[in-house]
Amino acid sequence: MKDIYTFPENFKWGTATASYQIEGAVNEDGRAPSIWDTFAHKSGKIDDNMTGDVTCDHYHKYKEDIAHMKDLGIRNYRFSLSWSRIIPEGSGKVNQKGLDFYSRLVDELLTAGITPYATLFHWDLPQALQDAGGWANRETAYKYRDYADVVCTALGGRVKNWMTHNEPWVHSFVGHLYGDHAPGLKDLKTALQTAHHMLLAHGLAIPVIREKSPGARIGIVNNLEWIEPASMDSRDRDAADRHDGAFNRWFLDPVFYGSYPKDMMDWYGSDAPEILSGDMKTISAPIDFLGVNFYTRRIIAHENHGNFLKCRQVRYPFMKKSNYEEWENNAEGLYRLLIRLKTDYGNPEMMITENGTPLPDVLEANGEVHDPERIDYLYRHMGAAWQAIEDGVRLKGYFVWSLLDNFEWCLGFTKRFGLLYTDYETGKRIVKDSGHWYSDVCRKNRIEL
Image (tube, rainbow, N blue to C red):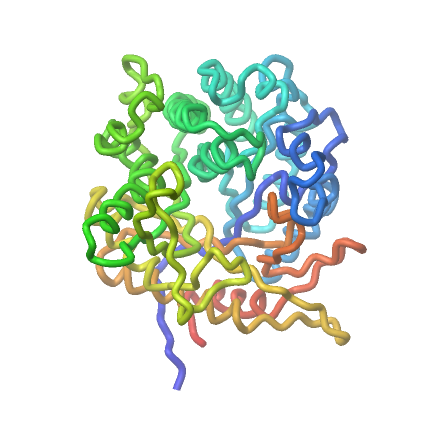
């Protein structure tokens, strides 16, 4: 007997991508370099020394990719726009050819019966803005507002679901403290100022989007984790609280409460960001939904000589891990996270905007790709989402990461997340078993294993 769970009527099933990861065409039609073009071309920054110069060539193959979604019954698609394709220098002159690409993309989606969900910023800041200080420069937030104005003026009549930022924690901390992402900096104060200005830009853009896209629904997308202490020792509990403060609360509290967590402001001390009068009111402008990207649970222990939070991750040998070893496969963590968001943040309307797992997928001689582990992963996480809904969480949609195998940032092409297998030599797309399984989920609005 199969376990079958039916979701609420009008639940939004979709899939997600990001511009630099799939588009390619980095030097075409007036696009200028982003920080990821610069970073990926530096030796030793990407695991396989590859770049996003071509990747999936979605810029030329977008009609084919949309046709695949239509055939699979996927009716919602989350994508991001390349700022440097639209405004090559980050501010000033608009590149009409860049805007025209996204206009064609949106029209093709709507013709196929697919609802577009647009993310304004998914880490690919124009290099010209980075040269002027990047997100650590307050002016970038205002230039982002102007960029949002340009985009929403062009697309706001057709796109009614907008996301300001994708995972500001990753861009600020991984890109400006750990140095593993573009622009490759390693400074805590810069990371925290970057995070603040990204949140400020989010708030500045909201009234612009509402004006230029009447009736639009607006959210921000955070990567969030369920975090547990490694023991009941007070030092481990405090370390887990600090990790939660830096990873989750630092990006949730300003949006929902209009303030940064006091314990983290105290912890950061002189490294805390400069906050001007009115900033927190701007940041806490009402949103319509919270986008939740979930991949793993973290178990945290105290470590005197650990990172800037004096903590470390504990990995249990009996827990199943993904092909990216830092991540546990722990669907219960998603359930507990959603319940925590309901309890601590007033039960906002939510969308799971990314969830998926990397696997070493292989194209078989018969042209098929079998990925039963991904099906099991998705089934269990969708089951966690279903249970959260049953327990009162206002979850309205679920977007699988990702539509396509693609350029996975500093991991290059070493990890495959897609429902479609990408043959990087030929550009051919092949629907994996998980893609066929997800098609059934989308059409029936239920999961069954």
